[in-house]
Length: 187
Image 1: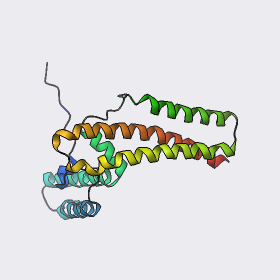
Image 2: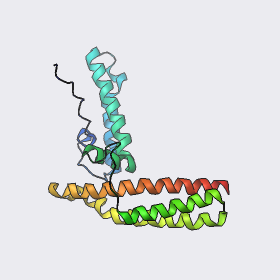
Image 3: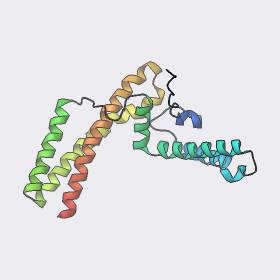
Image 4: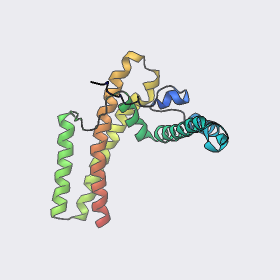
């Protein structure tokens, strides 16, 4: 049986820019590096080079664009880092704390009641409760995100697990907030 062809390893966007892995990279430095790489790899500057070099410059230019778009957006950067460390896998279900799931279930039930019996005055308290949960989550994870870069390597897996839990909780809350926005728009 022939050897299976393995997929290429995903690009390490931080290594591509020579930056330390971080949830809070310096935005100015990231943008400066992006523009410098753009000048280096832009296909127009390599139009007279060999076809192989042109193809490589196009690949590098695409990598540069993908890396910048991902690292410049906080949510995409978080998902990227979680995927990069094998923690965020599509289709994989993660266990969230029961108390959080109960809070979310309560909000969902309130939204279902609104669907059956619209009451514009009930939307505000639901929105406030969802926002309070989101604010609590954000405040709790901020020290982890801000301090990740300075953590010793052996402490990073625990921090990444905390970030994964935050990320999954935040996704639940975003769905609820979208539903609340839909109800608000109807009112």
